[in-house]
Image (cartoon, rainbow, N blue to C red; front, top):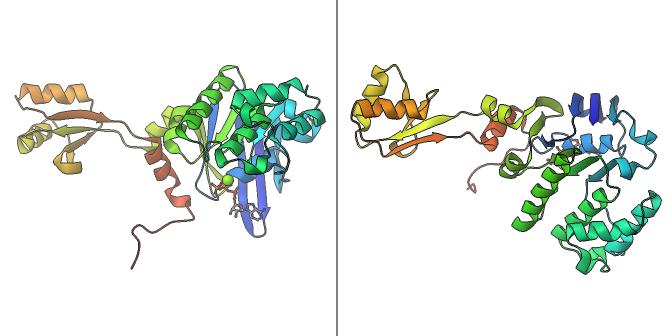
Length: 305
Ligand SMILES: Nc1ncnc2c1ncn2[C@@H]1O[C@H](COP(=O)(O)OP(=O)(O)OP(=O)(O)O)[C@@H](O)[C@H]1O
Ligand SMILES: [Mg+2]
């Protein structure tokens, strides 16, 4: 379990993390979301005592990071995959970490195998691709077989097979009762991986809720209806007190009604339907809506001119 209490971090006149309080619980994958510059990495660095808070506290299983005896055995983290001495081999890098944390040498081979780096274990890390570097960082996080795992953008640079592997790994780690905390910008991936979400914007907590609840609260679901008798369908709906608005490519969008009920209503009036499809709101849509006010780095659409 990770507990943040009133955690803040100031850089000059900027409050990068603003009085953040939340608890990251074991047994589920908790996704950590926020626009660029929201303060995710800063929060994670403070959790690991790599940065000191301006105010507030972080407790890892009830203790401050500094009070942990062999930290890697309690909390494993991937924050910056490039934080490896390039001249060292993957094997040596992990061996150094194992030695300084009282972890048996045999565990090095085990984690290399787990992340699929055994064939390149003796190669220097500086020749590694982005994806191989991520895998090495994940191996380091798993080295001490910790109860708590933290990953900052772990799928960065991974190919589809690697992304799938990470998703399965995180779910199985959480399934073993561990605490898994992961940040990512890939919403479609997060939607498949995380059970719980913590969303921040400009350092402040915007949401701390289950994935399903987050989507239900922040995105719109509706039923798409398409008929060759669109006008008559609209009249029938409106006669039943149901509002339909024109949607994409001439279809009608109906919110707040169940598809089965709409289908039966059309059938009673002998209206042919070419489409009757419930549209599930996406995590991406919910995220964009919630964070719209706290996005700092907006790009223009189009190429200008
Ligand atoms: N060492 C530092 N010195 C000064 N400002 C910093 C430092 N580290 C982070 N910041 C600032 O703190 C804010 C939060 O940055 P942080 O890297 O935590 O965001 P993030 O949510 O991880 O963003 P991203 O999604 O881009 O990784 C940013 O405005 C950033 O410029
Ligand atoms: Mg970051």
